Image (cartoon, rainbow, N blue to C red):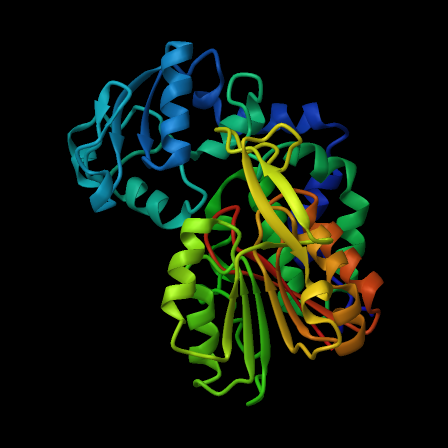
Length: 384
């Protein structure tokens, strides 16, 4: 289905910019010129913001490559006082004592709000870790969110043109162009005008009945289940919550053990029942591998539902969304449920997942919304 209005040039600012590049190396050169202080030959010291998995990984790379970490900060209470590399984690406010000329790297996938704080403190050389990963992938091995990201933009530019013409409203066109703009520039201010911070709560888009059957792929400990229950004001028929991690599943199961309408399932969604090996390596560049050390139980949604009804499927499952959609093909074709599917775990998911959904049911209307200020929380809503 075509968008209600043909995408104008104002909705294709960044898409048009991508089309002007002849090669990935041209894009990389253009990025390097925008961020001269982050080129490998000039980046001899930095401040790291963020002490979770990506911050620790960046600190280890710096130690290996001889890049001095002048300060390492994180406002999370549980990170305070931890020693990472040669630095003790300090709160963000401690940067007031640091030279503002030092480049600052945000080692998080949520970058807009923290970058605004860093800029307000007088730092002018600030960038997400993802920038380093696409500029110098040999030096900074990419997280899977950024692996071949520039290659995808250039190679699949026509796919994005097609997607721009096939989303169902003007807001989706604006969101798609902004998401592409962030992936091209790594400047989160590109996203600022189009962010809706309420995750899976797209404004004026989803209507709920009183008998919803909700499938939560990637339920974690139940945070998104609680969001759903709040939105339907506690009136629903059934919830199936899938979570493969055993310890997290225990919390999920405990949190809803008193509600017979909520079924917690200790498995991830995929094409069919089985066991996949999970590679928990630092780069997370390839989550599912034959040699992974962690085993993950998975199941196809159709195998669980059989002929049972479903009205809403949400998936945020670490890059397995395409396989899980294929594992729920029967349910999607039969019931045409509302879909809320993450689009960011692999760069090409942004166009491949909409294509897959329209192949399953051509009557779906496609909407794209952005729910955070960074690479994450780009969501496709498919509605009949």
